[in-house]
Length: 381
Ligand code: SF4
Image (cartoon, rainbow, N blue to C red; front, side):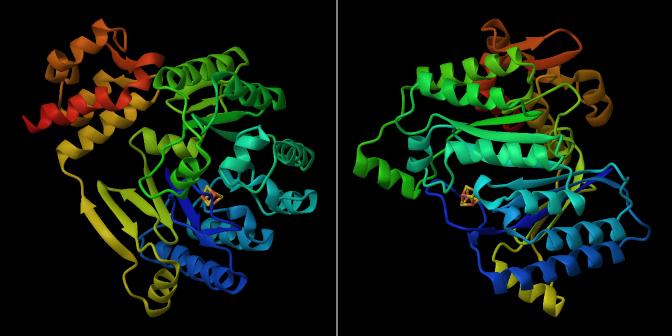
């Protein structure tokens, strides 16, 4: 089953740490963009010899909740007209707390959105201020309540840890505030500062610092332990959910699945080919209008790359890699092939090998990049 991703590149303001493909909201540009994406979706389906099956739609951004509910509805309708989607398909929309009202949430639900993913980032106002976010902690909690009242029974909340001036205790306050709301799903990421992030300048100007590395490790370990204890079970390096409420769409990325991405900068992976649409919103609209190829990068993955991808994404999951299935798929005995390089990690308690599966411990997840680098090093030898 395919996953369908729809990129909405508009935001009310640009956060000082954000490196996503997004720009400032513009009403006229938004209307032209939605029309272009509708054309791309319909055009993609017209190229298929038969109607393809899909079971998830994900509106990501940017801030998809800035669209009018009717626009989201038209995009969902186009997906349903172009692909065979079950009536209970997971339809997720990313939303920022300041963009929603009870009426808008009811309307989003009425047009077919059945899962909301709120970008909360922190439940402490001073941290939200340092990140230049537009909402307050109380507004995030209020937006959550509005979504519940509108009938949403599948809500995810995102938090970020290792923020400027954040202590372990501050971080755990946010985790506890999230738990108190009882969402079905939670995502918790470490802040990653890209080289030219305006937040770097703000930190230098205001003399804000990051907690030491050991504290960052404690934030990660203690945060996920608290979620586990609250019944939100970790299933991926940055994601926890009540059993059965894992993100079906995102699982496609981590389980060697296939998806089609629509909109500017959207990625697709299908039949072993990875492709990426042009990133600029204006260029994307112009290319749709003139029938020019939207794709700017298209690459057939080699057998080696497919294996590497499967190892990387498999290790992100707490269930790890099924070695027998991987041997069937890729014709490689993974443990035998990488054993020598992996042994130091199993001996250090960072990686578990039980004969059937290979998986990272929670402490190992903190060092995932180093452990996964083994696969690249071994392949180039
Ligand atoms: S709202 Fe999200 S996508 Fe938009 S600028 Fe902020 S972090 Fe980036």
